[in-house]
Image 1 (cartoon, rainbow, N blue to C red):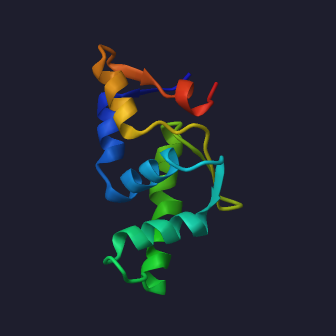
Image 2: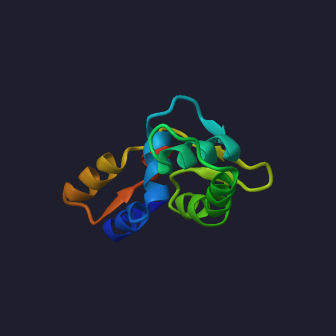
Length: 119
């Protein structure tokens, strides 16, 4: 069973892209999303309201998700990322608020696998 410390939660929440991915997946039905679709969502979130992100901006988001943010979220057992197929797999991703509330209820760590279908 994987646990996530309060510092670990704050580290994951410290980056806007990770925070948006986490929030997006926690409210999305299903259990998988292609990297291209996720990076388009993040790019749209980061662009000005009413404008579409440029191809260069979408590519930069895709690269940073692939190399930095998805592996970090996977290390915390919030999702699984298949870098070969560029697909994110997730199961009942808790909202950041749920994780912080669990940690705030007297535990220094929270069992992430209880939320995410880990072992």
